[in-house]
Image 1 (cartoon, rainbow, N blue to C red):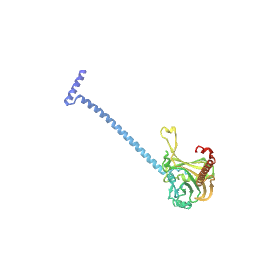
Image 2: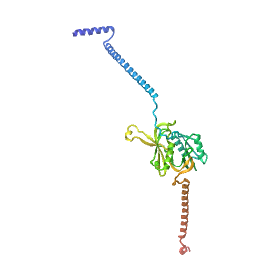
Image 3: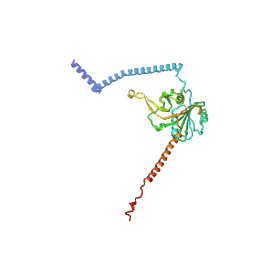
Image 4: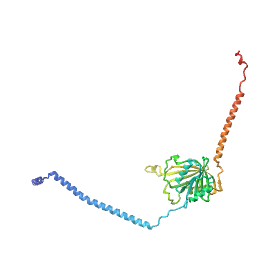
Length: 343
């Protein structure tokens, strides 16, 4: 049997030599043939997989189209609307002689309020009729007017036009966005959440001020400039007889910080302090509903400081006169023995 196998192998080798093919080439050809057979077996499997994936994608597209057609016939879900700021618009303007700090503050507030409209500066000393006319021309229901005096004092009027009521504030401790350079950075014209101190619900004049602030700073329902994101908070605090305004960005941390810190607030500015002076029943005037007894005008404060300085100078003059009188009284009399050694 072994001899027969050897004989057969020799015959095959001789046949291959006669054909000009070596033994190694024959083995390589056998290997390639095996690989081709395997490739031929794999190709139909790949085709089947592709066909299956295409069929699944086609089914998903059909299902999505069917869902869209079904949703077209269905009515849209109703969004709950509280009725606050249904169609509110606020005009923001200032008087002549406004300084750069208050002008930048006005521009910052315009970027924070999407339903605001701006107008040129007013040159009149009595803004009551002029602002009402501008609000009527701009079809605005509210007005924010910055009245500057002596290029140092700034008063802010918040009013509902044309019937009122209106509030007059004295602006203190102003810091604009460009000046602060804080870390907070929220979207322009995104929806703000309004946060009021609990003290605004205790006194009647603070309730009225809260209502005016909500009508001014709250974004109207489905406003065309509004971005549907709630990423910052307007905070109003009542302390020391004044309203302190702050603007915070809502920061959502990512990764490992979520468990450690959670949602945080980052201030983005501007900062300002509003001292309410008077509340009027009409727009920029009318019967006085509230008058702050603790308010002292800046003119009176500056006059008191000048009087203090004048008293300082008078005390200096008195001390100088006393010193001269004391030096005269304490002078020594001439001694009789001073001229003895001169001779």
